[in-house]
Image 1 (cartoon, rainbow, N blue to C red):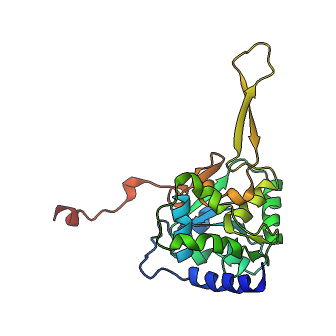
Image 2: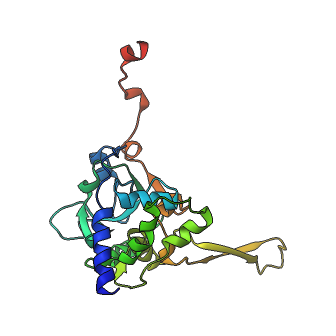
Image 3: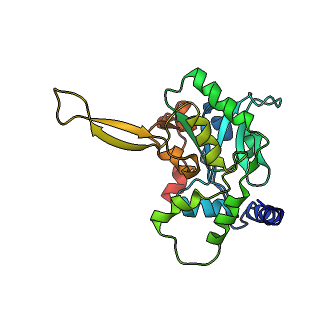
Length: 253
C-alpha cells in the first residue's frame, strides 16, 4: 500500500474503531464465569460496538463482529488470561480477557484438538504479534457504511475476502483461521462427494474436505462450524434452575 493510501487507511481505522454512542452492549455471562470456563485454544467471539463492528455484522449477517484466540498465560505478559487478536488500529496484539468483560461474547472450542496441535495453534498466533492490520480491508468495507442499496447476500462473503494479500497483515478471523489451518483443523471447509471405492456398496460416497482460503472467513464461521463446541459459562459451572431466586412480588403486580 502506497504512503497516501496508508495514511488514508490509518485515518479510516481511527474513525471506524470509535464506539457507537447509541449502542449499549449486553454481557450475557459473568466475566468471572467466562474466565473460569475458557481454556487455551478457544476462540472468543465478540459482538462489538464500533462502526467497524457494524459493517462486519451487516456483511456477515451475524451477531459477531470480532474473534480472538485465547492463549492463557502463553503471552508472557505477567497476567493469566490473555487473548491474541488483530486490532484495526494496533495490529496483532495480546490483550487481557477483561477487555471484553462488558461485551456480549461466545466461547467456541475446537473439539478433539490434541494438546500438541493446540500448542501449535497458539504458537502460530503468538508469532504474528506485531503484524499490522490489513488496512486495505478497511477501504473495501468503508463504502458499506455509506447510504446505498442493500448488498446481495451472494456477494457478501466474497466482498470480505478483499484485501492487500500481504502475509504480514491480517484481519481478526483471518489470523485465527490461518492458525487452525496450520494444523489442518477444519472450520468450514468446502466438501465434495465422490463414489467410494467399495465393491459391496454402490451407493456409498466419500466426503473430501477442501481448505477454504483464509481470507473468506468471518467471525460467525466459528459459531456455526460443526467442529467447534459452544461453551456457555453459566452451564459449564453447574446450573440448577431450582436454585434461582425469583421476585414473585413483581410478577404479580
